[in-house]
Image 1 (cartoon, one colour):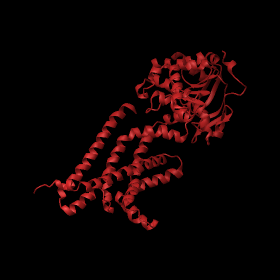
Image 2 (image 1 turned 180 degrees about the horizontal axis):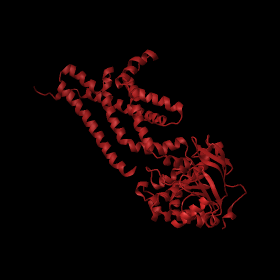
Image 3 (image 1 turned 90 degrees about the vertical axis):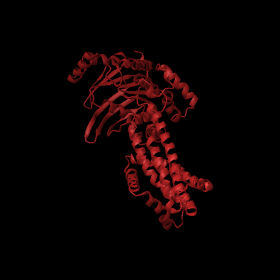
Image 4 (image 1 turned 120 degrees about the vertical axis):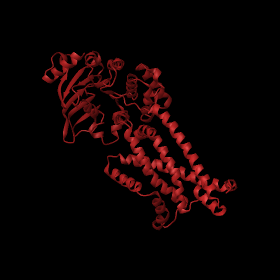
Length: 257
Length: 219
């Protein structure tokens, strides 16, 4: 893969260091350590309730955490999480959600242009041009003037991806982007994600789509009960999972495919 | 007995004056009550205790006393503290804003709660600040969802304006009373006032229903 060639410098793009998180007395993340290099696509998988989504939300400060830290492009999430620095950090990290979460009162185009207009203060005409290009890129330029309620799930999720790309992020977070979609819509969304991965944008993807992982992921993380059970190379994870739990999981998802 | 509907025409300028006071009071009560209601609604959902508790104390206190007491308090008691009277119109506006904001607060709070956590998080994830998220995402979505309740409350406010009668404000109902004291035509005069209120409220309800129909398609 030529992605390693595009990696600049030696600092990882995202470093999760000794991260632990509690909800009240209940610990949901145990001492998580992850490094993601620029241009890498890393898949996080594991049974539901294993803390995958929570971990993802710690990266852009949507969830706070008690111990450890996340360093994104040299910036400590812990340090900026209580000042305005968090807004700047988030504008460089795009996020795509399981249930799309588009703004229902705005058209597809307006959903995409809101952040560039208000956060980056790019003039309206220019943002519309960029938004149209993004809608072309995700394959639904004809939906530009429609409201989310008038679109299918797959179309909404592609608008959501365009919205996440509109701020020209260095990193994209995907939180089970295909889990709420009808089977025939999943492929359209995965196709867009595969293209993004091939273009070399840094991606952290929580998903059960193991086909996607095998096709484009540079690394895989398997989580269970708030802990990282395994992390490493995708093929060896599928061929020889080291732990019983991962073996169990791989057996189940591969049979499913 | 014979009706004398001409009594209304003879006093049309008085009635127009009274109606304009009523409508002004109504518009100012809305213009002040709605923004204050939005602020109270945000305070009601705040996780900061120093914001949450005073907001809820204020809202629950005002909502549990009759409007007429708030009107009396502003008109009669406030001057004792501040040393100067606001006059009936300003007193009525202040009392209505103080009172109606708490009702708007409860409506808007329900609207805010209907906005999914994910939509708020997605706004944050693109780098929007708290105030940008509130201004461009939370308020537009929430207000659209509660427009019918807001307009219903608006109709209630329009009717409530007649309470300003008690502090001597020459609004629409008091105008009729003044004309009646001279002409002694209570049936015609108060029926006319009732019909005007009825028409205004029916027009309001019609708008409510149209907006509800439009809204169902979108949010």
